[in-house]
Length: 390
Image (cartoon, rainbow, N blue to C red):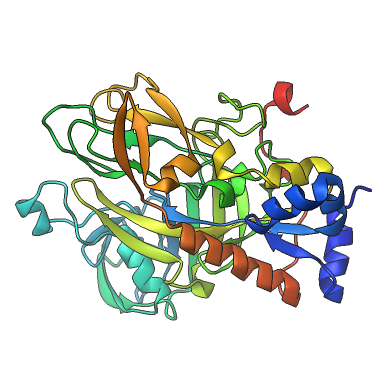
């Protein structure tokens, strides 16, 4: 019999909800079947932890005396965007410092940037702020310099425009001689390695491929605290090539997410330095999937061996935007440590952490079991593929 989110929340409040992670549901469905699993289980928790470049934080400082309308600002010598209001500014995770000495040694190699500052703020560290302005009658101050931290900020809102990709590329380098440097890591010549970034069977949007339960307003685990899906992520593509089980075999849906940085932890927001590319932010996200019916539980039982990812040549095809897919491989193959492409065995490496993804799913599971985290009804569904999901 179908359930509602309200019914599941009532069970959570009573401590009676049955919650499992996206690994555990696979065995339950295999042993008991989808129908019994849907009756037995109320929530399946998911998780992912990896570099999510399209991330950042809106910061607001108390007004200065006299007041300033910040035109340009730097946090530990990393510039923030100030084209909003007087003392509001946005720091992007991939912003790099001005005159970083590391860049003189290896062009494109930055040891510290926006992602690291977000981690520092979450950890309670002091960050140096320098601001300038052109001055107005109502905001006469032209310069301001101070130290800030998470306690002195009036608000710190993590607002990430594109997180939690629903599947993604496997990157290789077919150039015979040249090593290349990408956001998916260093790629050795002649298909010397293959890098990927996804939790596979634990990944949130692969457990709800048609966004049956995840929508605008969905409450999530974000950076170690409760957060929300606030919109479709940029580059959201609801209708990519899909496998027979409905799982997309290309980069597909994305999420825009929001939460209070003041409640978050540096355990789940980590600045990342990627050689030859720049900086990013490792973000931890977990999403609960309410098991409303048998269809949804079947989606959550997807296995790594059933999820295919596209292999793309980052030496030519990716930068030239030709979207050529050389092959498709499963996440079971990727996690085995090697794949075979054009007859060649290629070692694999993950930019994301499956171990941390599982930790997130288990933390979210505990929150729900303890009654401290209830599910939310989406106020609007995400765009999906009507012809495939209808």
